[in-house]
Length: 183
Image 1 (cartoon, rainbow, N blue to C red):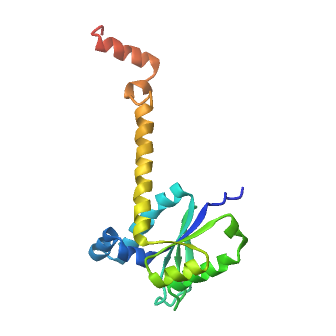
Image 2: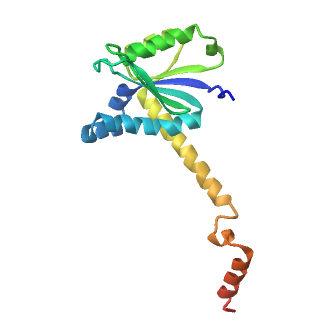
Image 3: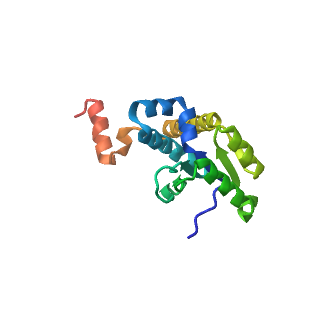
C-alpha cells in the first residue's frame, strides 16, 4: 500500500537550528554535538508526525570524507548527511532547485527551516517557503501544547478512567459491598 502524501516537505538546517535554540546550544556545550543532534531529532519526531510533514534534518558531513547518506528515523523524519565537501546549505538549495521542476510542487509545500539569511533568499527564489529557527521552535512548542491539551481532554471525559471500572463485574460488586461494610 503506498504511503499517503504528506502535506509538506520540511528541510531543517540541523547545525543552524542547534546554534539558534538556547536549549540545544546548552546541550551541545554540556554534553557535546552528538547529544544536541539527538535532542533535535527527538524533538522533531513528534512535531513532524503531528503536522504530517516529511521532515529531513540536514547535517554537514563535509569534513568526514565519506559519501552522504539518508537515514530514516520514522516514516515522517529522516536525517540527511551531506557528501564530502558539501555543506548543508548547498544540499538544501540543490533539493529546492530540483523540487522547483517536480510535479509534486502543485500538491505539496516545500519549507526550509534556517536562520541563515543568504540561504533564506536562495530557497525563496526557488519557490520554497522559509521558516526561521525561532519560528520552528515556536511551532514545535505550539504543537506540543495542542497534543497535551488533547490528551488531557481525552482523559478527563473518559467514563472508564477509574481503576474500579477496569475490574470484572463480580469484583466490582464485592468492592462495593466492602465499602458499605457488608463484608
